[in-house]
Image 1: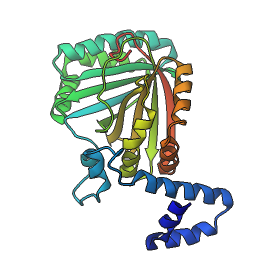
Image 2: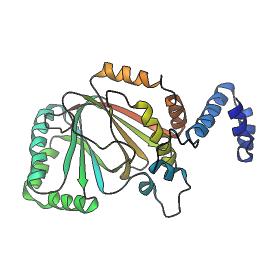
Image 3: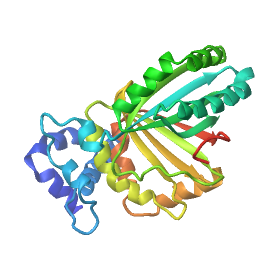
Image 4: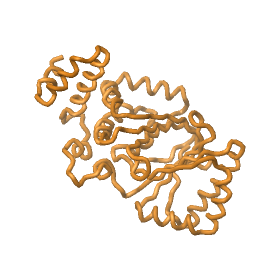
Length: 290
C-alpha cells in the first residue's frame, strides 16, 4: 500500500488519480493494478533485471530510433505464411509443399524453412509456414526474384493456387530477448499466440516481456520464438511455444501463475492488446520443428 501511495504522489499522476476516484469499483481495481504493475516492472534492480537490451529499452527513444531498431536486429528476417487450403486438397497440398521446400534449397534461394504446420485447433484446413532469410533483405529479395521467374516455381504456383482458398504473409523480425530458434526432436504440439497491439505500445510490450519470459521458463523449455511484424499488418506480435501435449500446456501455464511476477506481467500487458488469437499447430513430416 505504501508503494501505491508513492506512485500516486507524483504530480504527473495526480490527474489520473482524480479520474480513478470517479470510476466504478471493478474498473478502479483494474486501473490501480496496472499502475502498480508498471512501476514494479520498471523498477531498477541490479539483482534481477536483464542487462544490455533491457537497459536500452528503458531509456527514452531517440527521434530516429524505430521499434525494430530498439527491439531486434535485421541480420535475419522471417516470413510467416498462412495458407487456407481446400479441405479435399490438404494431403496433395502437403505433398507438393514438401517438394517445394526442397526446391527452395536446390535453387539456391537462401531461404530456410524454420517450421511447417497444420492447424489442429483454430481455423481449420489452414497451413502455417515460417521461413527465415539469414543475411536479411538482400537474401529475401534474391529468393523472391528466383521464386517469381524460375519456370519450376511458375508451375508450382499454378498447381498450388488451385488448392487454396486464401493466403497471406507477413515479414517479421525476432525479438532480441527471445531464445534463438532451434530444431526440436519429436514430438511436440506448438501454440502460435498472435496479438494485435495498440499503436505506440510495442516498447511497453517488449519492456514487460523481457522480464515476463523468465517467469514462463521451465524444465519443458517451451519458448520457441517471439516476433514483431515489420512489413504487412503492423503492431502484430507472434509468440511460439512448444509443449508435449495439451495437458502439459495446461500444467505449464498454471505453474507460471505460482511464480512471483507473472501475474504482474499479464495485468500490465492486457491493456496493450486490441485483439489476440491462439492456434494449436501440428508439425508436418518435413518440418524442422517437430
